[in-house]
Length: 186
Image 1 (tube, rainbow, N blue to C red):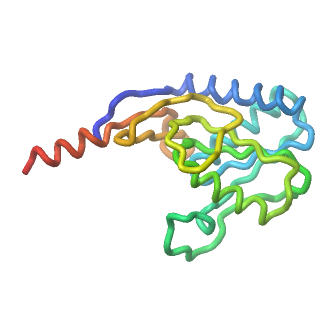
Image 2 (cartoon, rainbow, N blue to C red):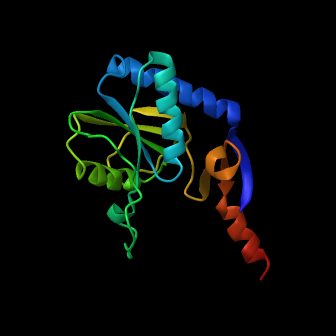
Image 3 (cartoon, rainbow, N blue to C red):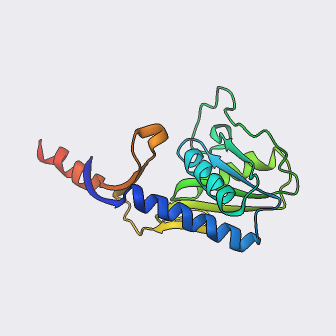
């Protein structure tokens, strides 16, 4: 895969997360009855950072959990295995901020909605994403966005987080150039 360009470096990611946290506080008039749920895998560390930022700005605790959506995906044919979600609090009547790294077709978020409502009935579900790249297949729109990034279908957006990848950045790759290189070798 050929690297096209770095969209967000470590400092830009940190600023985006801080901005999202302030927008969440403004929209919810504080953090009362608010929790943050990160979608595994890269939505989880981003969500944890947002929850920590909310706590540092407003004080107090903002419950944080992780959500495994594997069993609810419509693009996975074999759904064996357990549920790696870690939510140790009730979602009943909570304002849930669901966090994912990249919003593309909307299918992961749809699966997350199904997984969440199986665990209780939140007062509201709000969506925060680090990158919104467009190309929705479902009518899903984020409430909080770190970076709007119009892309083509031949591009891939990769979010790296230090907790899983050793560094923080968002990079866009052009998969069409890779396909072209394969064609040129024949």
